[in-house]
Length: 403
Image (tube, rainbow, N blue to C red; front, top):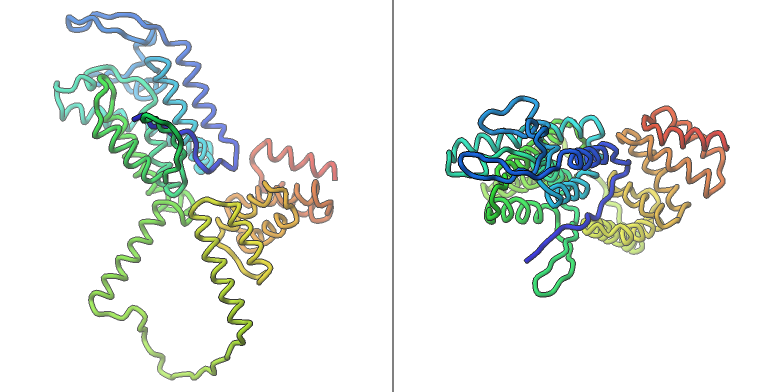
């Protein structure tokens, strides 16, 4: 059965220049260094895919030189080798690059290349001479790409990956990232089905391990912001539920707190039937929004949000929910609703790490679609103070000049 992921249901909010640069560098270096020829090694004639002059940049497990721990990751042994690696890097790396930012992403990528190679070498010493793959020079970005996929699993475990399958018949289906990466890419492809000779499966596993561990550390230490949908949040939620179950099982009533020294009687205010009905509707709609967000059905969630706003304009969604809803409304060209959602976001979540991009979007909407010059100038000037991306800063200043 053939299975290939073809897309994810999220996209980067910023252009992932770092990831594009890595893909381009790999392709250019492959074009320069690819040149199949034969070598006599240990009495055996072996085919080597790398040109003679570039062989010094492969990583030799028995006598690796320090620079080879980076250079090996830019060499590839064929068109399928570089093609699949760059496809997976594009598929998963764009969102990781957006999440980490250019500098942190490049540091992470090169660290993944180094540590996946070290893992490959260390496991090779455990296997001894029994493993042919561990006696061959190491080439390819697979270890670094595996690290990127591993950290994608941590940052975006609940996103959906569309996979193409072919087994007598063919089609597509959507699988949550946590299951597809953990079971298909890691467990099945690199632990169960180790069938292809000369493939550095252990470099892949070391890359996945590094990516997952590094991602959890970045979230736990606050270096990367927690969204509530990442693996670290899922682990904390599971731990809270575990502690709750343990407390209840031990006979403790988790809802019984310490009584205050003096009891204060509060007069119960009876709600009218209309108020109770309204609160029930609000509760149901908020629950539906959460359900649609979990399914990544942003269009349905946006419709529900507008219904919620009609019932009570003071209702507030979580930071990520509100941002996703606002972005969805913008894609649907519902600019008045978009502006209100972005306004509410800025008002309540002004400390968001990319707030300048929200202000830029809101300023452009007020300028180009709603013709509200005063509001547009206000938000564009606020964005101008904080923007660091040259392209976005130019766009902001050009719009201000027009106004």
